[in-house]
Image (cartoon, rainbow, N blue to C red; front, top):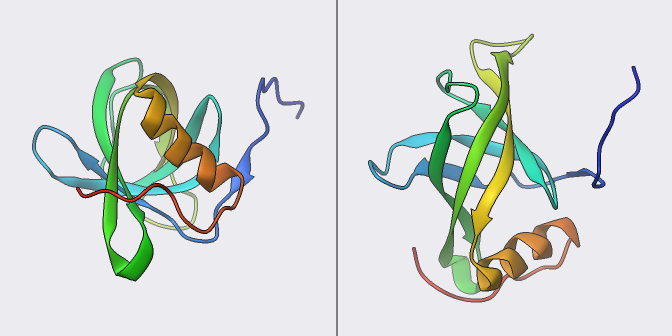
Length: 118
């Protein structure tokens, strides 16, 4: 099946945790990412077309964490074939320019995002 992607997708060796920015509830982990969005393995189903404000937790030096806040639109959501988990695709709707650099570091396989705290 041919994909109509605008951006190259990068599979991640480590899978950053994703939290609801309002409730701090763990939603899942990112498995691949592109400049336009990411694929996530989630614990529960999320509503397609709905906007979510999420915190993505990135590891930095000395096991410190950095949170990147993003607003996403869930484009698709389906049950994972091999488990009880959910696979979903998120389109990046809004992200701060500096935090965009941190996500870009994941795509470029750089070792360290900019330091910060959650």
